[in-house]
Image (cartoon, rainbow over all chains, first blue to last red; front, side, top):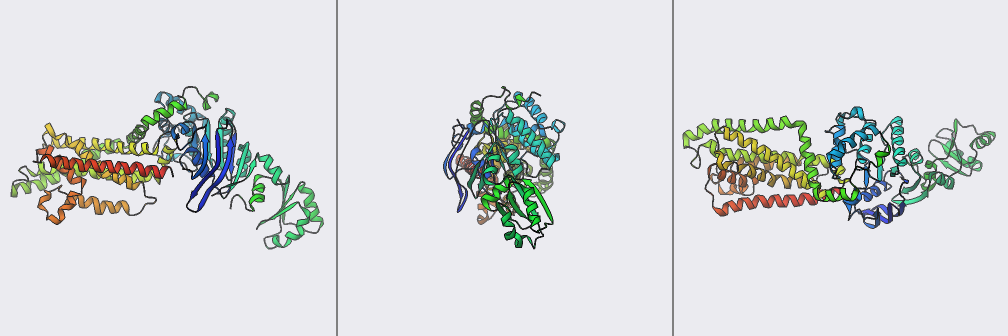
Length: 306
Length: 280
């Protein structure tokens, strides 16, 4: 049985269709991603799963239960990592975990050792008695994730888990999330970072303007919507646009951006060679593998991060 | 650490049991957190609770009181200190309620956003609202108790019945605090609202609602300020218990009903507004 089943799920705010009749399922133990730019409806979808945003129409079941009707039962199975940290900043790190656990009816005798285990998992044992105000952004984020695990949820909802973190902090966090996945926890992740989606997600939906524009595994989506490689060339911002027509014959598809031109081809190096032979010498060039960013560009004509 | 135990230790009650407990006790967990986090500034709470009555009693009761007693022989047949003490107790607690239900509630939605964290637990928005108000009520009881003890020590009240001023003061505080908490829960941004309430509601109430002199000494067109003030209704009841101010049975019922109705209305609105804000 799927742990989450959404059918024609819709949320409107006045005229705005924040989430527009989307349907998807998540199976137990899966790592499921919602990828899209800001305002695509990812966070709204997440909040509807937790029952903290009420849907306008459609059906939604979490472990077979409607979160709007059986909120406490649904949320007792969920760990929620919100987009904005909302830790109790005046409390110490360890007390944040213990007091949050109280809201699941958990006794202190369970919570005290649990808090210590979670602090170790989050690499925050040293900071156990530190006030949250004094922790760095990455530490706060890890503490928020530790807090979400206090009730041993089978489903973890992570809304933009690494936004605002430096690369090292992101990698530490990804590693922690992998370990949870290995233990069978279902991860549901929203992100507008393609590398994060590629790292973390078995399967994802690409969202734009409240709708699902594509669904599949990262590799599958790249195969379907892009070429194997991408050649990025820059001729200077005044010449890029003028050369687009001449470049078109060298690639399967071409994507002119303000600062560079993307040429989609299976062999980037050979394409570059052909371009040079034609007498076009780019100021800089780069051959890389296709990513979810390219998929998104193909599907929507825009980049993920504006 | 056994990393396998991280996702499932086998020690936590199963989710259905967690949910059942929270459906029953969720309101208490919120009160527990709010009271527990007061631990950090415990000494300043006690210090303020002790110092406020001391300052008031010395300034109003003894300073101003000696003047009043010398010229008019007291008010309502008792020395001024005895007359003014219940009013000072009630108004201090109402003002404390104002502090506890304005900025802290806004902070929970706007700055620290902690209420949104509660909403992701098994607890419901209604339980969060009720627990928050309960914690404020308990704190007011504690502050009123300290105030009353100071009054007893200073000889401003007889201990036999006057302890009933303690719950009366907390009730008056909640009669103002619950509607204010409900209102604070609707504010999206910090504006002049709380400062205006302080200036145009709390201050006039403190000065014109019979704390320092009987309401009846005011011209009739100003007495309505007292009639609609939780402070006045609370003060009248506190005077009944403090020095036996003669009140008729219906007057007592009227004062109590007014305060209880405001607590009920404010509580209902707070539950509704917390719900709207935390699940929309």
